[in-house]
Image (tube, rainbow, N blue to C red; front, top):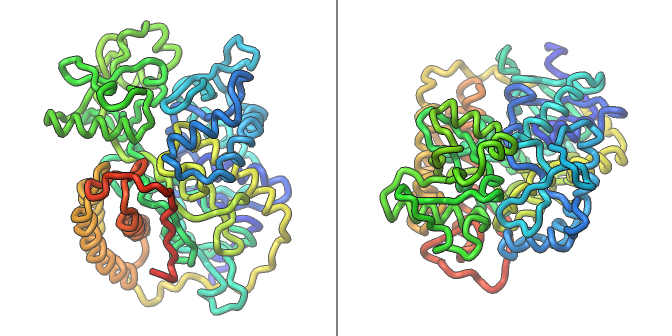
Length: 530
């Protein structure tokens, strides 16, 4: 036995974005925390967020107005309790980040910080750090996480699966930690913990085109499902309307804030088209804008459309969007003089692991925060810049619940058994299945869906699942196999959820069910029923 392969902590956090890091910092003064991240602390979807964080900070704004905008974007499916909980704790969340030293963009207003506006918002309520808010927040917290003596950071580690009492044949089922692959040393560690939190982000890599980083492979949803937790509203995948279209630009997002500051969507001949689709034009919610772009591209046979900011001064663009300006210039696009080529891309999962207001899942001892969850906040379509807010608010409520609970003693936890597997002989199997999955999910479970497309997708998913489970049972686990296994399961849950929704609502648009039903209901899947 290798003692170093079994380690115990008070709290195990899987994922290092805003949700994971803020939870770690809230706990570390009195708890021993392990923070697991697949790459480095800097690699997360949070760090890629450009626009900002929505919160009621202006006296002209109100909690009820923010709730109303969230309900409107969510197409009637937002949970009233969860939405009010998050919005009412918005100012507190921002004040916590400011106290941590996050350098939000200042101005000479009474608040002292500039507020911008994004699609779906009736007020300016987006606090931001120029056009790189996620990077500013992540860098600030990362420095503090790295320097805290009670936080053990495990970079280049990926969770294989959760350890539960039920899996070990013990009574009183609860989460006891996780098996985690140390990628650099190719060994699986046993990390025991009194409390475990999933902060693994979304599942954008299930689609061919996405604004997400490569780490967004649905890990939290898949692990929680295998551990017996419910998931909900997995059919609601937000496709960001404006991802940069360029052969050398991978997953580069063109922030919603550009449209909030007057950006216009045009066809190649310069014609605006959004007023033909919605009275709010470019400021319509993301699902409407994404479907409008998809419609125009298909109607005209286009590879992309164009976002025009040339009516704004160069000084304005340099001040408000320096990151986008610089990246586009690197690719030969001067946004002060020419429009930006854009296409929709998979951006955000509105559903996920079911949690309560303390971020607790169905499994005692297991919490989930951020994009991997279903809290009820986002409904059928997430309102812009509510995502980072959700991370900070629920990290606070999870921390409060964990700190109020006793540190549970852990039973003996076995090491990972790799005695009956061998090294993989053909890695091409994994890469081929990955490519096939992402292509048919884009074609069949994308912005517009039909019953036939969903049936075709599910048929292929079931074939892939058989191949992958056979591979998983016979070969040593590696990063790519773990991610592919999680992605295929997440894709299965997305398709099953989509098949259960016999209407079009928010982000889920079906040609077979184009109408919206009078009553809004969540799509909840339970492992035992499956």
